[in-house]
Length: 211
Image (cartoon, rainbow, N blue to C red; front, top):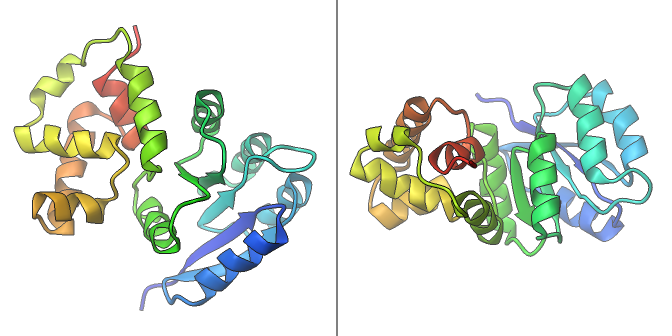
């Protein structure tokens, strides 16, 4: 039997903390470790019981979520971070990704999609809300030409990379292209291997390098 994916939450709104805790507690795949109402408490508490994933708000009282992420990541290098916020501004998005966030979801994300995104994150994906993924690719596309390494991708791999840049989850890509989820994962593994990257953000950066 597989161990559940452990999750901690850093969120100042009690209602949001309770909602996410109930959502996670209703599943067998996840285990809720703890919730923290600010970054200072999270910085002290999370390293004591490092979870697989930390869901991190950005707009926190005192230390903001991005600074909190940086501090915790130093102490918990194997923990993955999912930003969960209302912020869509380019500056916040790229600051969070540069700090080490592995995923970036907006708070209007449907509950079911949040759980799917957490599972995908745990298995090596970099889920993003569609609006965020579009911002990322738009920035990389400005005044840039695709990397020569993209020429090594097959037509199917280019098609899948395109869907990744739009924020699609593995399950949604499988449905779009009438493939199994495992087949999609194999294609994405080949894409990352050919581009010499480890996640979605790096793949977009490699495909559309900034000059």
